[in-house]
Length: 356
Image 1 (tube, rainbow, N blue to C red):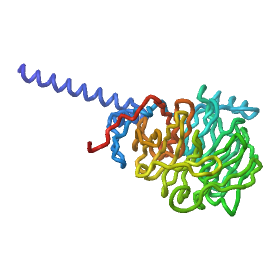
Image 2 (tube, rainbow, N blue to C red; image 1 turned 90 degrees about the vertical axis):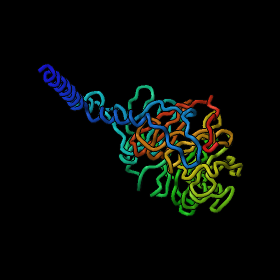
Image 3 (tube, rainbow, N blue to C red; image 1 turned 135 degrees about the vertical axis):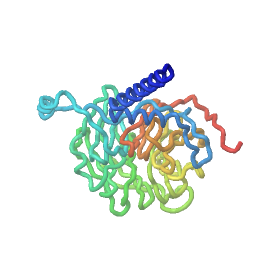
């Protein structure tokens, strides 16, 4: 009799624990369940990449994630909006493809929403800039932000680069049917006003003066140093203009006058998509083939960070990067977010190649 009672008690206790677990799960929101899944994903080791190097998180450390922000309302329309919906409503990114910025403002190009957002890094408020999207023939592309908060954006489908003021009013349109067919990225030499536009079809860089007149080409289509076949991105560093190409020498550096200086990244990059250079002359290059960011110091690969996934520090299609101080802002397009990675300038690249 006592044994039967003990079995009944154990059954009741087990049933009560099971019921409590069911109640706990039913009380969880989908967002919480997603967080649990991501937390599980975070503990998994990063996969070995195609270069045979063990990925390292030492050079870049996940800091935070930006998925949107509280929308700021301005002017008379903003006053009415505040009366209707309160002081702010939440904005969520749809397909962020490019990031840029100036001072404490991060500019996010959302090709899915056809909007350019200005995000305040201090207050976390966000606002859509004008009616920028209606000016584009296709998706909005890469961005460069100037000191006056005006900005250039490439329109690959429209074969043009558009310059807007800080309120989103169109200032100028750069085009050249003979030399500009598929603009991929834009960079501005703010010392003289020259605008450099990388073209993915003609495989060169066309330089416009401050008045929007094309006057010079950098590089040409072909194989070898100083030549391109499929430019995907570019940026500037102390050494000069850094250009990435998915079919030719993956990373080439040119002087600002257009002369070839050096290249690196051979047999390391498979499909480079974005590039950034920090104040310590370290170079960060994203790769579409394995969703990593490869870090170079003095032309040598010192670390790989990332891998596919949705957890912090993982990516699904990196399409743009921007550096500010010790932070790298990454457009993690298919994850619908911007990841903020903290740079560790002390990292020396103490990784061990596989097979040793």
